[in-house]
Amino acid sequence: MTAVMEKADASAKAGEIPSFDVTIRVRRFNPEGDAAGESHWDEFQITAYGTDRVLDALHKIKWEHDGSLTFRRSCAHGVCGSDAMRINGRNRLACKTLLKDVNPSKPITVEPIKGLPVVKDLVVDMEPFFASYREIMPFLITNGNEPTRERIQSAEQRERFDDTTKCILCAACTSSCPVFWTDGQYFGPAAIVNAHRFIFDSRDEGGQQRLEILNDKEGVWRCRTTFNCTEACPRGIEVTKAIQEVKRAMITRAF
Ligand code: SF4
Ligand code: F3S
Ligand code: FES
Image 1 (cartoon, rainbow, N blue to C red):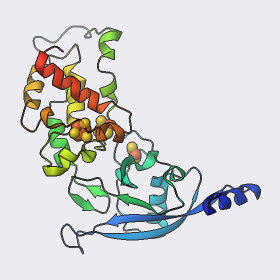
Image 2 (tube, helix red, strand yellow; image 1 turned 90 degrees about the vertical axis):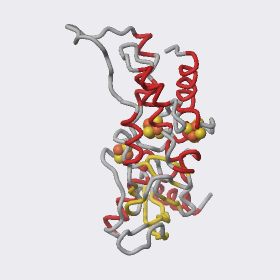
Image 3 (cartoon, helix red, strand yellow; image 1 turned 180 degrees about the horizontal axis):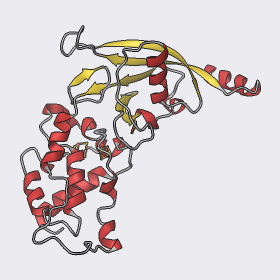
């Protein structure tokens, strides 16, 4: 039994809520003190409970140890997509990652996601990510007059793009992609996922335009089927499969 488990076990026997001590190592960058591109590690010891997530640990550090620690979060329930970060080297949402699931008997490392400019500590500039997203026109495109009633769609037609509707734009996929790391020019998996969501929507008439946009030298053909994106997606979207389907639609024009 590890020391962490022994402490939790002892607390449980004493009728308390089990707690354990954990070390969090945070990669930090202060734009007002550090040279551009220079970062350093800070270590914090905290006491946590079995249901605590990495986000709870970061809150504890900010509120009790160092108020200058900077990170983004909003919903705290895996919906808004604002707290994607590298935890023990893997992209995850801090609000969906339990400390006990990432081996708290060793220091847990927390870093900003890769491939996007760091603004401060764990906050990155998401603008390059959203610029690609805007480029694929993430909205319904239709021609002709406005209909007088809703646009009908069968359950089967809706099912065709159901998986890619789940995206919360957290950037965990794009920032885990080695092709994106090389120069940040690749559209990235998140933009392609969101193009897929409209290309395969039976009500949409902009599929052709989107395929042309993604047929760019920085578009779908840069994907090397690495699957990092699929592994990173906190919504369980089959990202690589969606990219393959867009590639196929580009060749067959069937969508
Ligand atoms: Fe996040 Fe998944 Fe959307 Fe990528 S596809 S932005 S990982 S929710
Ligand atoms: Fe990158 Fe995902 Fe393709 S990680 S190379 S976009 S399969
Ligand atoms: Fe909203 Fe984590 S804080 S997804």
